[in-house]
Structure formats: structure tokens, C-alpha cells
Amino acid sequence: MNNQEEQLSALNDIKKLMDRSSRFISLSGLSGVFAGFTALVGAYLAHLEIANFINAANEYSYTELDLEFNLLKIGFGVLLVALIGGLLLTFRQSRKKKLPFWDRTTKNLLLNLAIPLVSGGLFIIALLLVHPGTYGLIAPSCLVFYGLALINASKYTYTDIRFLGFCEIILGLIAMFYIGYGLYFWAIGFGILHIFYGMLMYFKYERGN
Image: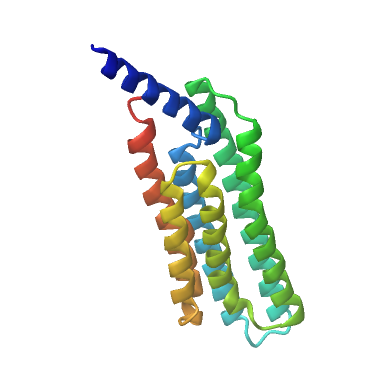
């Protein structure tokens, strides 16, 4: 190896170290797969809840407010399970790579992820409280704000996350024109896309490492 090759090798090593210090690379692709399957289960439960509401349309015991409340419970339950599973799998990945799980990069990632997510959550709650009967906008809104959150946080982790964010936004905008099919778009965005990108990240960054 000549002097020029040694210099290039050293520069590559420095670049890798800088990239590692500025990006959260312990994110597990399997956490995306887990979140995707969890979302599909949640979509199925929501479908059953909506079917129960339709079948009980003539009964005063089950109102539209009850439906919205039950759908929110399912949504928060899916989010909680997906977060716990994702954290455990990512923690496992960080230990495997011998990298810190919690550092400044992790804080920046979560902060940039949280800003659009919290804004979207407050927007959806406002829709339900101030504009009753607009629950058909929940699925498109979730997809759009979630996509914005992924794009905003992607600069602190794998760039593949940015493309997932764009896909979520596009899907959410399309869902705005098909309000009655919001649950299907929700299942595609949070379920199928998560599974696809999770598997892609697993085979690209984790398998064999």
C-alpha cells in the first residue's frame, strides 16, 4: 500500500467515525417489522370495532363517540406495543454493535421525531373535540404527520428512513381523496411499508454483521 492509498484509507476511517458519531446506527430493522405486524393487528381490531358500530347502528347503547374512543384506545395500544418492541430490539442491536444506546445523537433523533408527532397528535385530538364526525381524517393525518416526523429525524439515522417518510406522506395525501378507505391506507402505511422497509434495513445493515 503506497502513501496515497494509506491517506485515502485514513480519510475513510475518519469519515466512518464521524458518521457513526452523528447518526444513530443502532436502529433495528426488525423493530420496523415488529411495528408493521403490530399495526396490521391494530387495523384488524379497528375493522372489527367499525363493523360492530355499523351492526349496532340502531342501538342507542353504542354511539359514534364510543366508536371514536375505542379506536383511540386501539391506536394508543398499538403505539405502546410497537414502541416497547422497537426499543427492546434496538437496545439489543446497540449492544450487539457495542454502541451507546442513549447519547446526544439519540436525544437529537427523538427530539426531531417528536416535534411533528406531537403536533400531529394535538391536531388529531383537536379534530375529534372541535369538529365531531371528522374521524375519517384521522388516518390521512396520521400518515402525513408521521412521514414528516421520519423525514425530520432521518438526518440523525439511516437515510432510508427519509424515503419511508416520503412514502408515508404520499400515501396520506392519496388517502385524503378516499376518506372511506382510511383504514386500508393506515394498514398499508403503518403495516406493509414498515415491514418492507424493516426487512430492507435488516438485510442491508444487520444481516451478517
